[in-house]
Structure formats: C-alpha cells, structure tokens
Image 1 (tube, each protein chain N blue to C red):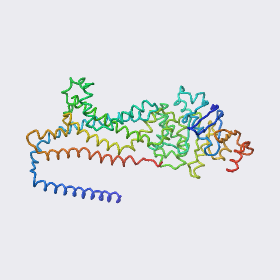
Image 2 (cartoon, chains in turn purple, cyan):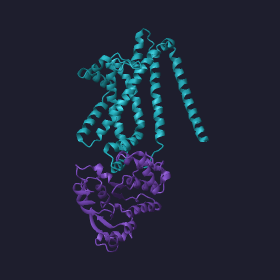
Image 3 (cartoon, each protein chain N blue to C red):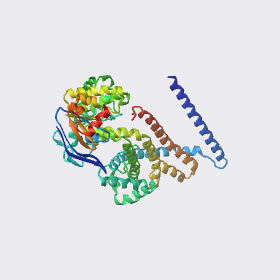
Image 4 (cartoon, rainbow over the protein chains, first blue to last red):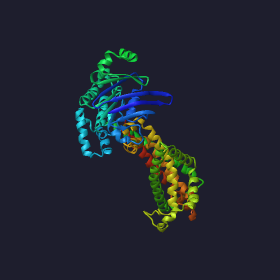
Length: 240
Length: 276
C-alpha cells in the first residue's frame, strides 16, 4: 500500500532522512516513535509530497509521489493528513471546512457533501457546532474536526503528525479515542506520536527512528518489552 | 446595551468637538484673508455644474482603474511568488521600475511615448464621441489615463497582495493542498480570502492614493476634477482661491468616505478571526 524505498532527504547541510526503507500494508496501523529531531514528521510529510525527497522512491496506492509526471493532487485525495496545529481554515465554518474539499476537488453536490459532513459531525458528537468557526471550538474539538475533514475525502490512508502534542491533557483522550475507532474500522494509518499508550494498544507495528534512520521495526509488545537497539532501549526507559 | 449607547455618545462628542474646532480655525483663516483678498463665492459657486462633470470623469476613471489594478495586482503578486525564476524576475522588474517612478512621468511616458508606438485608442476611434453617463470612455485621453493609472497602481497593489499572501501561514496552504486542492484552488478558497482581511487597510489607503493620483491626469488635458478647476480661471473670472477650495472639497468628498469604509471593514472582518 505504502512503499518507502531508500529515501534520502536533506535541507542544505542538514541530513534529515538517511536511507529510509519501510512498507505499510493495507489496514495496518504503524506508529513512528523517536526523539524530537529524528526525522519522524519529515518522513510523514514526504509521504504526501509536502516535502520533496532528494533520492529514493515513495509509492502510495501505486502512485509515485516524487515522480513529476504523476498527478500529486489526485494522489493526495487518497491520503488524509492531520497536523499538530489542526490547520483548520479560520475563515470558514466547521461545516464549510469539511465540505470544501469534497465539493471543489471531488465535484460532489453541495447538499450531498453537507449531509455527509453532518454525519461525520454527529459521529464525533458535535453536530451543533456545524455553524461555528474553528476559534469557537476547544482544542480537542478542533483536532477531531480536522480528522473528519480529512475523512470527508474518503481517503484510503490517514497520516497523523503528532495530533495530540498541542492539546491540553484532558483533551488528548477524545482525539485518541477517535483514532482508535478508525483503527478498528481497519483504516490504514501512519501515526507519529509520543503517546506510547496508544502505540502499545492500537499499533500493529512500531517503527523507531533515530538520527534520520529507522533503527527498529517491531510489533508493540516486542518493541516495548525487548527493544533490540540501544537508542530504542534508552528512549523506552525515559518515557516509561 | 447601555455600554454601546454611551460609546456612541462619546464618539459623537469627539466628532462634534473636532468639527467645531476645525470650523473655528477655518473661519479665523477666512476672516484674516478677507483683509487682503476679495472673495467671490457667489460667482464661483455658479460653476459647480462644471465640477460635477469633472467629478463624473474622476469617479469613472478611478473606479475602472481600481478594478483593473486590483486584477492586475493579484496576477503580478502571484508572479512574484511563482516557483519559476523567470516569472519572479519579470514581475519583480515590473513592480520595482514602476514603483520608483513619479506618477506624472508614467503619464507622460504612456500618453506621449507609448501612445505613439501603440496607438490602441485608434481602434476605438469610431466610438470616440460615444458617452456613457456623460463620460467619453473611448476618448484617447481617457483610455490612456486609465492605462497609466491602473498599471502604475497595480505595481503598488501587487506588493500589498504579496505581503498579505505571505502573512497567511504556510500551513494553511499545506492543509489545502493536502486535501487535494490544486495551487489555484488553494489560493482561491483558502489563501486569498484570508489575505484580503489582512490587506484591507493598506489596500484602501492605496485606493485613496489612486483617486488622488488621478488628479495628475490634468497634464494630458483630461477634463477630470483638477483640470476642470484649472479651466475655470480661463473664463475671465480669476477666483483662484475659491475654485481650488471647491476642488479640495470635492476630493475630500471622495476620499474621506473611502477611509471610513476601510475602518468599518477592518472591524467587520476582524469578527470571525483566528487566534493563531
């Protein structure tokens, strides 16, 4: 489903990704863990082409992301992404935030898009906020809206870039619960997060990154109990 | 809401007292001038209908130029932010060469220079006597006046737009593109609507400047407000002071509402605003 082969990326003299190989299967939940600055977010942003890679190949649903001939806009319709800072559109209502892409990109009829958006809002329990603006929502509500905004495009892959890092502790759970639901519905997901409880419970595999490389990939039980790599071991000791 | 009412009252008082002070000062100036200058307000005000005709020309040339320069300004601003170096450089040269010229030089260059090389107004010569709302919009001076004014102003407006677009966080564009929107869709639906809010105050200032700059078109004897005022004393009644005072009043009538509109829009648009 997602294939990442020998990917290298650098910003000037900063060598961020140093030969990444990774494969994510359909319906798999992969959590990427690692210290700040290890290249987790950059790798995720490369998957939907927000960052350009200098060498290697990334293929999602059979479409090459780095190839200039492939239609990146079309590929991105299949790839939902959720950002740390929500990045909702502040000048649109919650409803408009959710319907704008299906209507403008997929040419869905407005009423149809609205109906689906309301279903999504009911699902996250805030249909009454449809006419509100993002600034009138709590952080947790904003992040859940940004998740359903991505879902409205009916993606086959969801990427999460530290979705709970900007949230107050009491709001983290509502966002993680929604992500858990998605995982149970067998959405293909790559999640960059520091929430190791979530990784242990939901992930099929955990990939550990350090210094621009993936140094260990293992199922969560094995990863947390018997980490092979020295840096992974130290990381786990620090957070647990 | 008692708070709202008392606030209006407060602003009302400030407006009233400021106006009263201004009137007092003007009156003092007036009576001191009367010692040495004989005013002929009655005769001067008889030519108001000429001013109204000039006002029509100034209004229509400003309005048309506003639309043209806004459209052109957005295109040039996008050019300045293009990913192709050659487009960036070309629009950069356009902006910098025009911004650093005095407007009167641009007018002279366009009307006496470019017009010789590209006499596009001749295309419209069959309709040169056609008037819409009393404005001869196919007249060569009118066409070149609009061209000079809108192209000159587009260079300023382009820089305002560029600043506005760059002020909107890069993340907003990323979010839009990640949903599958094209570059133009993300501009149209996400970046530009937000950029508009940021740039309303500088943009309105620029439109005020545009109205004021249209006065320099008197140099190509386009009979807008300023030229009208200048022509009054060739009628054999040289009431220069009166004529130019009337002229100033007319320009204030145009520009002050624009400034008030800017202030109003600034507060209206701030409502649905974010806290980034």
